[in-house]
Length: 266
Length: 346
Image (cartoon, rainbow over all chains, first blue to last red):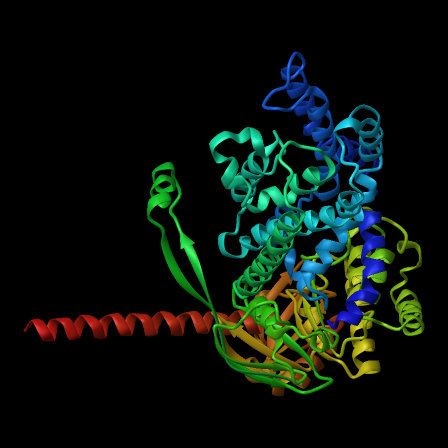
């Protein structure tokens, strides 16, 4: 499909993605309440730092960090690896392959469509709390503020491409749930989802180079005044590099994998 | 036009006997086997033809359709559909074909069919006015009106299949791959779908390749049939000619109006069915006029019908012969191998 046709199809793909997100009201509400683990970590770490700062993080720093992490997580989380694995295993991928649009675009449009609705409650509440209670720990640098949204967009792209690549592994392995679960364990540890990367101790240095940092911690670092102020060029450059690597990896894995598709089941 | 030459598809299949020990063993050592799903199949189908693609379960029909529609990469051989190599799945190719699988749905499960139609309009880049016209036409022909805004999951099987057909045809493809499109449908719905496929084929000069376990679908729609078994092509030609060649005898059915014994009926032809007063005989074609004369005259039979043998029977006999030939060839090969071994030993 040409780029022009893909662009013309995007509004419809997006609209149908929204309709799918809203198809089950109860599930939709439950979904809104998920991916709020940063709130649990917030409670944990603020109690650790109540009496005195922990590793230079005050209680207010933790509040700002985890509310920012909640916002980024809500805006970037997706489940495409699980969806693709199931589509490949069951043969449902066949119907996607018969449509003249690259499944990367089709899945991406559908997942992007869900974001505004998934975050309809959590993100406004987190933003209000962040501005209200953690503002002292937030950046006031206009450049950093301006870069927050592009950084979140890149974090979304890296997360989506990495999960798409894991989903495409199902062409080779049929079942990739275990790999997706391993991914989530690594993500939780190395993205800053459970704690700021500075608190990782000996592996903190390694974490700064892994893709996971650029999927969550990078935009959070931009938003919050953490002790460790990264060079902006390195932060955004790292995100751009990982976006290119994960996107290329996802498309290569797709291209190789789809040749092995067995279109099982009917 | 569709052309396949020496088309072959092998699958690597993991074999494991049942049981706990074998499950554990399979963790460290797996036994794989190459299964030849399609084995050197060649055929050509011209534009506008309606062809039935037949064979027993596991014969390789669906695998062939999936290769023709670009879902599977062939292991070897050449395939071309409307001038395209299917597995490249170029947009121009996907816009010309459609694949309807009775056991797979392209409709979005949680949304009404109208949403899938809108999605297909967008991705196939169908101009708005053409989309409206085609949808109106399909809605009328398939009586979709009340179904368009009901969630797909709440449609009956027959309703879903009608909506499925419409979704598959909105971009007006000129090659239709139909894999069991009437599976699970009642007789009335099967007839409706057949009529629709025939009408679409005539209006758009579309090529139709159909697999179905309902031989009535094939007999009603396809003047030509391709038969495969164990992945190999065993017949390609005119349906009626196949029946005539394989089993030239007619089936003569009638209802008795007075008791007649089996011995007397056997003098007219081979007795195939006796269900109360309803009888079916197998009669050589040249003897049919004489038999009919006797049945209607001295025997006073009623509700007389003369038919070709059912396609099912013809195919069953064909597959039976195929099995026997394969078994004989295998036995011969084993005997030869044994004789060679003995000769070497002596």
